[in-house]
Length: 168
Image 1 (cartoon, rainbow, N blue to C red):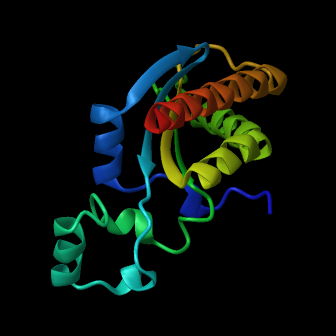
Image 2 (cartoon, rainbow, N blue to C red; image 1 turned 180 degrees about the horizontal axis):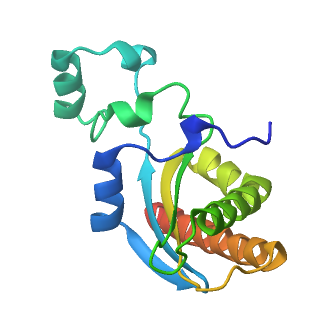
């Protein structure tokens, strides 16, 4: 299914802070990109109903590094990517312009995310992603879509390099 629903958006303040403070960044005009990739370690089937003692037991015995309820939400795991889109009010004064840009970005992402989602599924990882639009002009959809494809491939390449480093 090729939709962009609420559960695919990055809404958690804690994870936004982690993304902007600990995440990696790069710039592909007109976007500044922030992203974090987390591994999901195999855990018992009942990990969704663990008590505090059970979580401490798993961490103590190195079965998982960290039990984070954010990564255990059942509606989150099939998508593997949480996206945050920002458009500066300083650059685009009118809300109609900001909303149009966000709509174009969402559509470009929605139609091209499959490659990265499949890579994350095979590596058993999840990604927090923020796209900050920095141009003062409203670029055409074809340009925005082309840049989003470049961004997603670049994140996919960094994902592959991370998995290659884990193997060695």
